[in-house]
Image (cartoon, rainbow, N blue to C red; front, side, top):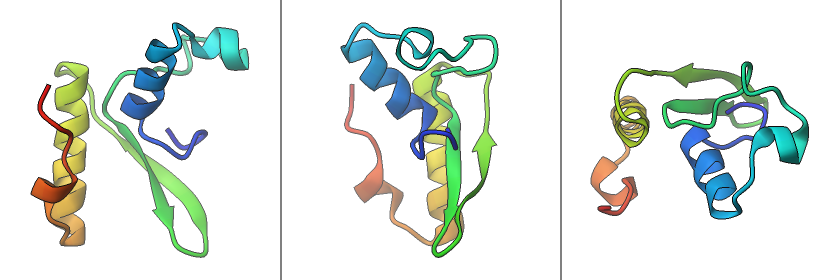
Amino acid sequence: MARFHRSSYAVGLKLEAKNDTLTAQQGLPLADYATHGGSFPLTVAGAGVVGSVTVSGLPQRDDHELVWRRLCAMLGRDYATLRLDAE
């Protein structure tokens, strides 16, 4: 999520661990901000967040993994060393 400079999955997991919501914590409407997996901010060194990439339709962890896998491939990073631990 561009607003938080973190993936939507990371934001959602952190809120879930605290039993919190974006509405309660930030006053943000749930209709406009989702904390489900699948959205990543796109950050450019020296420029900051310039956009985001989002997918939806799979279970949220799978959406997160799909985007992360493609970003790693595009950037030439080793997905196996950066992926989430097994559930």
